Amino acid sequence: MRTARIVMAFAVALLAATPASAAIFTYIVTGIVVEDGSVDSAAFGDDVVGRGFSARFTVDDAMPLAQYAASVAGSSAQGGGLVQDGTRPPVTATLTINDIDYAIRTSDKDEPPYCEPGFGCFGPSARIDDLGAIVKDAGAGRLDLTTRYEDSSSCCADYGSWYSDATDDLRFTLSDAALTSPDYRQGGTFAVSGIGSFLAAYAAGDRSGGVDGATRLTLAATSLQVSGGVPEPGSWMMMILGFGVIGAAVRHAPRAQAV
Image: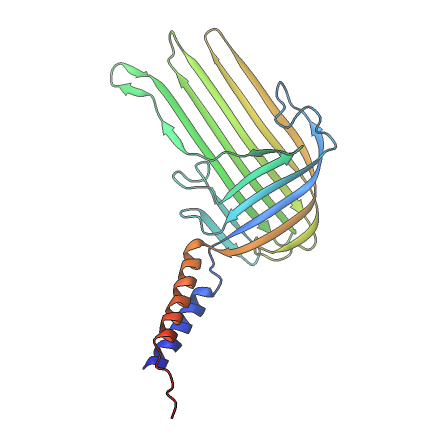
């Protein structure tokens, strides 16, 4: 009976130790900044053309309510308010230039103005939407990575009116002959070709005037590194629990007595 318990405990531990389909994957794109079209903004400093960049995309392949698709032609994961209301983006990103990190924001909000029948609508309104997507085209050997954030708010058509808008956008289209697996989680290091773009724009004002600016960069990608497949915390807990059961079973097993 005790032997059966030990065997069962081993089975539980092995099952828990099996890599889960839900895991975190990291995509690091590196290359050179080739163009700076910024206006009244410099998120990474004034001297960026010719400097190296690193764009780190993190992909959760089981983000709840995100949209997933897969076939022999390719696969994709998409989500966020710009894709489907109420979902979270499965792809997030941070761009690093001159040792300065800029994380693309993520948030979701919809606050319409107050409307009174017969009187119209008045009061502040706000809307925030995000997007995160990764799309793989195996036939073309192409991988698209996209993250975007849009934030807008305003108030009052009469005295005291104001507005504010903000946008973050980082995206790449990468090509390489080795990107032939239909699975976007294809691991490895690839010498890629492709162009990326970064935008961080803002605008705000009231009846007395306003301000605006944008950091707008063109990025030439040269390398892609894909790694990951680490089980989620729940899988690790199951694994630890399984080995704990094994330990308990072995500890309580009867010891052989000397004759």
